Image (cartoon, rainbow, N blue to C red; front, side):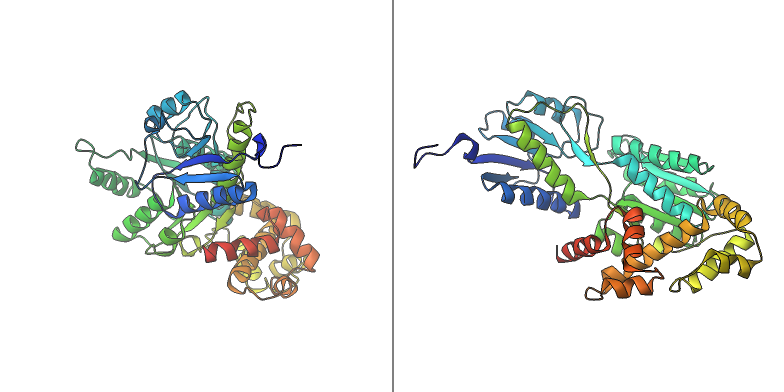
Length: 397
């Protein structure tokens, strides 16, 4: 037992530096997750970008703290981080960085979720608008392409540099986007590498006389609420789960400061899911029977809709309906109904904070609260109550 008045080594205060490039929505969520962990530990002192927008890693060579959580975008920063005596955990997916611990969202999973969402809109043509100098862009693209390939779909690709200077002015990026847009066939679903690129894409479409989402359905990644909600057409986006990333980065740093070995691979967290807004509020189905089925489902979504009723309405066999849905939407009729019910439930959970879950289950056509919970968790990876709680925190933040 430690003597009175002395602090045990395990309880010694630890100073953790948090370096990040700014105070946008993404960084704020990282910080909240890190702060959550620090408050639980009770013996952490956080130092956050001391009165400067960003701090170079090499400036910490003589710093006497215990650990660092940083957003590192360049190879030079990675090299400097590895040279420091303190353990460093990176939050950035900008480059493929071996031998440095990192926690981030599963970038490929974000691409897969975006593809699933656009496929559920009934689209048959797809495109990816990315960056050619970012690791996360490559990962999101690969996840997007793989999910589309599994559904028998191909994809057009435009990747531009986002390193702008006198030799590579930013307006040439805009001009290349316009030229590429003129070569596409519509309607089409587009994944933009992040929300800012998504808003630029939407603005360019409108400038060229294209309708969003009727001609071009656009989805971004990150779910930066300000960027998405104030886009000229509100932007659908794949939410990162940034607060959880910050929390797990702090947990990993804690283990490293305790002497545990560096993990061989990145720690990847599942994205939260798709937050649907106006930019993908469309169902483009060329098959007339599937289009009729989609319309019937939309009109009867609040009822305990059965496939038998759908078959009778369309005068078609279940097998034929499943084949047509698979070809047009990449899923079965049952799965399409489940996804649409969950989408409606998310809207109600977000908008009606005091509406009881049983009433939401009834309003979305679920047979029981238990069925509601099971389907919602299977599709969203979280329970209805957890989704509502998280939305409440995000709104408060």
